[in-house]
Length: 282
Image (cartoon, rainbow, N blue to C red; front, side, top):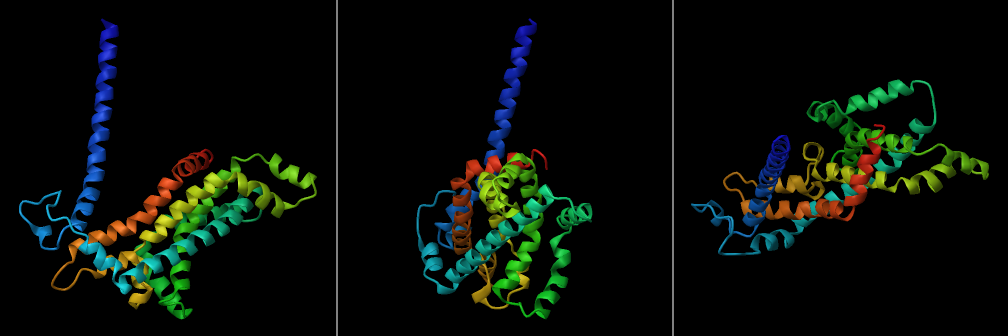
């Protein structure tokens, strides 16, 4: 009797978990499907009653409008330039900082660690005015360096924490073996630690790229002209005073999601593995 009750409970638990997963997947996936469906409709059909998920008048007009518009393509170029630069610079700086925090002891180390962690707790909206004034004072307003440096303020803390935690999982014998062979700290870092830390670096790189690619607030505040604005701002600019180009907005959103989706699919195993390894001693 007890065995039957136990099996019934396990079965009910599995059914409950599966039901929850299906509902969660539907809740997360339906908006994406609706966005994709809307991108293939005419702007007038978007407001049809009753609404239809599958359109009868399938059209690529919204994509043609986006891809045939030089100004719209410029938004994608800007996003690629900024996101790639932020990712590369963040990885380089975070790798150096993570190595220092993991392998050395120096004055004020705990205080610096506390400052790095506390930066993530500050709401970005509170920093808009200070950063705007600083960027203008430095002559970086409406430039790539202004956007890149600002984005790095929000990507570096997480990157440093994760890479430090990942380096902490690597045995110090690796460093010592390099020194025995006549190498130094730089050799140990770039020839040994970085190659074996590729999963962690990939995880941090993908996360950093996503943060920079999707950033809206500072991309809007620190740019003035359309030739410097990024994809999130380009989507917002499709909202006119008297009309919204919903189909083009959805098409641009789909096109803007593709780079992040491809990155995740290409590096999925390394991404998950890197996060798990970095979390061991985080």
